[in-house]
Image (cartoon, rainbow, N blue to C red; front, top):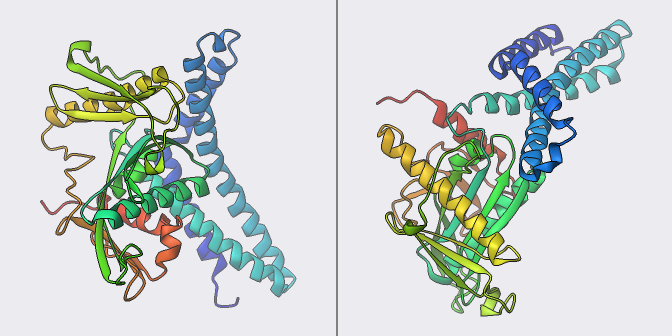
Length: 369
């Protein structure tokens, strides 16, 4: 413990926290919490259920953001006291505990620092993620299902709400596509670095000769629209088809035509929804995702310098941003950031923070262009 310069380390922690507080704008955040608290206490709040849910959700997220900053400040104060007691009483156990807490606080500050890099126009929004099987046949469909599991596990570990909106099952195994919504502060900004083509290399469990197979899946991430966004879609521009929801192997999920396929005729954008209980709910969910995609398209057209946030993702050779290698060795490597880990199973089980943090830092670097 003698090698640790605790006073210097604590000063560095405080300096980092101060920069985070400045970017977070704590006074403005407190003002927002006060305003939302006033709205939440209104006696007629729940007369408008949708608005009430939005207010309470925004209040909860804002309070959680403030709590993260406040609790870190308290932890640094407690660490300073622990170090003083340990040094005064020459208590090695206390100093070892201080060393552990120092590392934990540093890690927590790094996570908060990442959030301060999310300053894009849509970064604070909830996210809608679509995974599509690409080249590789049944292995690609299986890979798409593996990615769905990976992202839902990652979100669950963070305590983020995930709602699967649509799943299109492949005939033999896996998924043709899946769309899900992630509701959390900065969900879009965080997950947007995952957009691109993902590549899997493994011994195919579907090949009776046990040959190595390369397969691809595309990940698209878009921001979810808010009620303040103005995207009106004339009914004449929409083609809406209804059909029966289906599960794995083509089995019927229900006996009514509740699934909805919505096509925006001018752009050709198609959105399918089948995981809600009724046709009305599926139609509403499809419309919201359609509006999100059209909002993104509109903003990109207004400013040509804004690159497509969802991207033109081909899901094939030469287009991949990350490789997951399960044979002949174990490795997951991001081809943009060079971040890699040897425990592929852990990554596919949701251990994505290292890749996402590296992606956000990489994206925030000044462009050479």
